[in-house]
Every structure is written in C-alpha cells, then in structure tokens.
Amino acid sequence: MIQYHEKLQRLILFDPIGSMMTGIILINPWFVYMLECANGLIYTGITNNIPKRFAKHASGKGARFTRINPPVKVLASQPFANRSEASKMELWLKRQGRSAKLEWITSHRHAGTGICVTLTKEVFILKETRGVNKRS
Image (cartoon, rainbow, N blue to C red):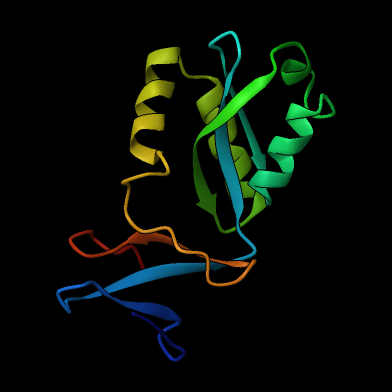
C-alpha cells in the first residue's frame, strides 16, 4: 500500500508485513543509464525518458557510439534531481574502467535494488530508505 504524505513530501510505503518504509520522490528526474551493446561494450548516457532514449539508440538515431554498436538492453539507471547532477555522474562513470562500471551496474540494476514504483509519468521513488542514513 502506498500513501503520499504531502507535508513531508514523502511516499509512505507499507510492505506486506505492515512495516512502514518511506521513499524519496523526484519530480521530472534525469537519469544516468548504461546500455549493453551487441558486441558486449557498455554505453553510458543521460536522459529524462529512458524508454524513449533507448528506442532512439536502437533505431540508429541516438549517439554515434550506438549507431556503430547497436544496444541490446538497458543494464541499469540512477535517477537525479536535475540534468546537471546526472551529467556530473555520467562524466565520472565515463572516466571509469570496465570493472568499476560493472560494479556500478550491479548496485543500480533494475531488479532487486530497493523499490522502483512509477506513480505517474513524472514521479519516481528513488530508493527504499529503511536502514539507510538519510541526507538532509
């Protein structure tokens, strides 16, 4: 069950046992994403709409890299509050070696990493905050 607490600007989530969890929300987030290409290479980019951007890459109208190395699937993504934050993470990731990228993918994979629920087209829950230190 999901309830939105307007005063706290938080989503209150109740797991099947009835324990309360809260989620951090973003409105119109930007994402850093990684794609697996047909030849096994990894592409890193940013977007505010992952399915639409993947479709552009797959159709050959995305980045030059994905025109040469067609994408197979989205490996992982991470939401950010704005384009600037996403761009900084993209640059950092592009400077990393393959092993660091694979580690990032493992910790940001879509399945099994926290909670990812789409409430509307624009609002996403970033992560489960139970057991995580909150930043203010």
